[in-house]
Image (cartoon, rainbow, N blue to C red):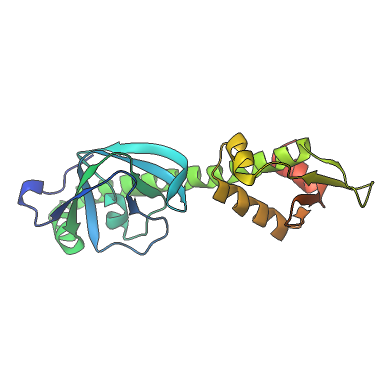
Length: 211
């Protein structure tokens, strides 16, 4: 990515952080620092409880991490977690903005356009990831449906395995599986919160699953 300032002259602090450290959180207020990955690899995606449930890509140092957020003055749309040990340079936001002010106006406009395009692409991917998780869950529920014990004309799904095993089968984190089930209940597509899930809207589930 582009370098906006001579980093060796930057007053930013350099931190060495272990793998698994969350460096950026979606929707967090704009950071007071702009992060530059001097060395190491950072995974980008959607995290659940500090662990990436969906990975969208990686950033290898040396590279800026949240420069687009600083350029647009917006919160990040993805989570970032150190995939290896990383060296992170924290450049104060006011220093970063001063470097932007030194750019020619046409260059600054191009930079903002690129940052905006990058953000819109990330927002689209995050949206699709969330939709895919719900679609996979809906498909799984329909595939495992059987007549309900207390209502033979209705369908239900007995949860005979732990949720973490079902989530692994679906390729999502256990926290994501629980969140999707909660959303399906809120939309009245299913009911029940114990070991049996009642399918209350088969048509809605089929539409969600793309069946």
